[in-house]
View 1 (cartoon, rainbow, N blue to C red):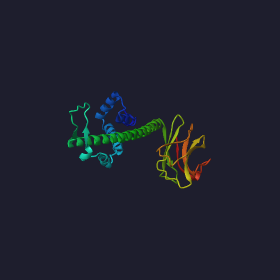
View 2 (cartoon, helix red, strand yellow; view 1 turned 30 degrees about the vertical axis):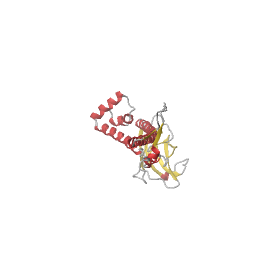
View 3 (cartoon, one colour; view 1 turned 90 degrees about the horizontal axis):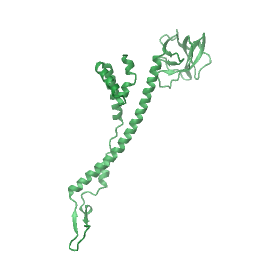
View 4 (cartoon, rainbow, N blue to C red; view 1 turned 90 degrees about the vertical axis):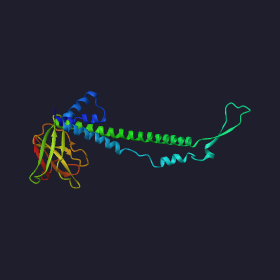
Amino acid sequence: MDIKTYISSGVIEAYALGNLSSEESSILECVMKNNAEVQAAVLEMQQTFENLATAQAIEPPSHLKAGILKKIEFGNPEKTSGKIIPLNINNSEKDTNLTIPVWMKAASVAVLFGLGYLIYEVGSKSAQIEKFAENNTTLSTKITSLERMNSVLMNSKKIELKGVEKHPNLLAEVFWNENNQVFLNPKNLPAAPTGKQYQLWAIVDGKPVDMGMYDPNNKSLVQEMKTVSKPQAFAITLEKEGGSPTPTMEEMYVMGPI
């Protein structure tokens, strides 16, 4: 078993979210016992989700208890006593005034406070659950995207583009596969100056073919470019923003044959 492939397969994320079948969970737990790297990855993912849940926790406001107590007439005999009228009235019976015991008033306050806090807790927890579900969906989408990209790159040929004579220390990577997909990792290319942009080229039958512009605002480490079949090499030049129909040879930064 390739441990790194197994870790990046998404099984650990599914385990941490409780979405793994009992059979798959048993397999993973068995692997954890015998592989420290997998165990560390599982613990790290569980800690990530725990930190996310903690970050979303909401403390009840300090004014909640005072607000509930304010609405209760507590400790005032004139407001907490009343007249009891029996259902069956006999002429010989007299009206009786009963005073609610202090312990009963205290118990009522405790119950009402508890009920108010419970209502608040349910509301806040619902908001937390909704937010957590939203974050979970976003995280799952990112994981799915990373898994897809990882699968594509693992089945692609990696071409190293090394710095030309004017830029000997620069390096970039291109990934090209049988579906003619091309992905660019700029590695250590410096940020393009204002008004300029890096442009990728493929050499096909000895001629440069535009493969698109590198977008510095793209947050992905590896950016998908245009498709091409039967390339012989790839190169990157620095062009005016938006690109050029032909490469500016004196502005070539890196190049690499397949």
